[in-house]
Amino acid sequence: MATIVPNNFLPDRLDCVYTKCYCEENVWKLCDFIKGRTPDVLSNCFCVFISNKKRQIPLWSQKHSKRDDKLVLWDYHVIFVFKDNHKVLVYDLDTTLTFPCSSEHYIISAIRSEENLNEDFRRLFRVISAETFLKTFASDRCHMINMKDGNYLSPPPVYPPIKTAESTNNLEDFICMDEDVGVGTVMNYQQFCDKFLRV
Image 1 (cartoon, rainbow, N blue to C red):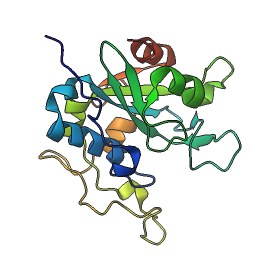
Image 2 (image 1 turned 90 degrees about the vertical axis):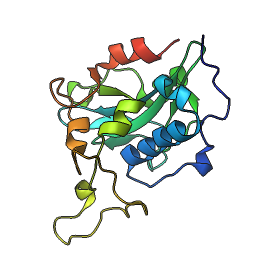
Image 3 (image 1 turned 180 degrees about the vertical axis):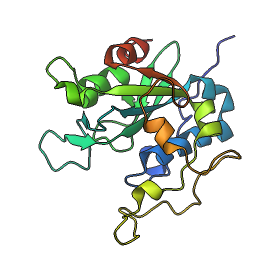
């Protein structure tokens, strides 16, 4: 029997737990919210890390950009994707697009085609089930500490760092786009589109 997905299975953008520059934790919090509120929907949910071996990936329609086209060159970014038999939605708390956004609109407007993209900027996508992400992700936030003065590059979330029984920090395994490292499946642009562009 198909799961009936409620319309309000995720909070509105303003009600989401959000900390600037901590996209991986923002998505973890979304996954955790679903697990606590509508656990039957969790199997339809995915965490997606976007990066590449050079750690320089362009994304458009980003609210932290000062450019007219809202382009940001991230070292990595993390989004949440919901997919069932009727729709595919992207939840990106850093986008200027709607929240949620259809996968088609997000791919066209935020990710954009790789047809004319320099090889160094081509994106890879580590796709992880929400359940696996909740069980395995850990970060002590050390990547956000300025090595010169010991201060945070951007203020951290007010809640304690996320950890598991096995790890206090494995963020690098998620950002890494080596198929032999970490959890989930590493996809290229076309594979990602094939999986999430349509139901």
